Image 1 (cartoon, rainbow, N blue to C red):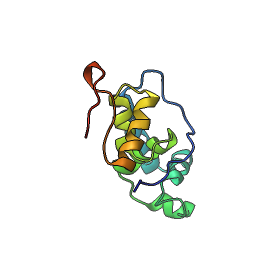
Image 2 (image 1 turned 120 degrees about the vertical axis):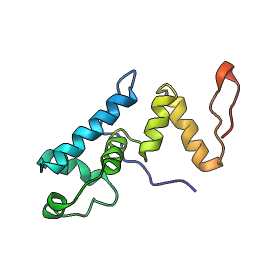
Image 3 (image 1 turned 180 degrees about the vertical axis):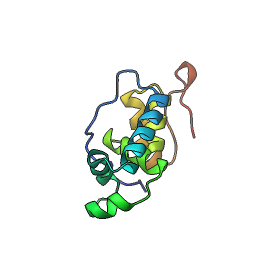
Image 4 (image 1 turned 60 degrees about the vertical axis):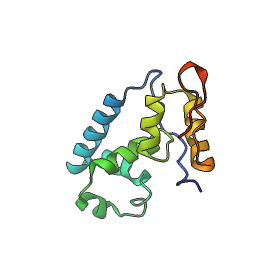
Length: 121
């Protein structure tokens, strides 16, 4: 059984994505949302639990870093922050994302490990 379907990517990751930079962007998004930035609040509508919130509900809601991370992940086309993080840690290749989708479906990771060997999870 797979997780929630990610949206179509609204943003593209850089050619060499950096996890620390993504964490910083999530903290900045969180700060902007907590400050009431309309642009930041609108970005939170990609979050599956917040999509139906009114503008007033979003303005008064206490957001968490976890939610900001999920927003970023979904903007990049990933279902979860963990998938985005794994994608970056695996070198950011398209093959790595396919591996994580297969892991959700098959329950085992078939990503190439060191030396090209297949590693299980």
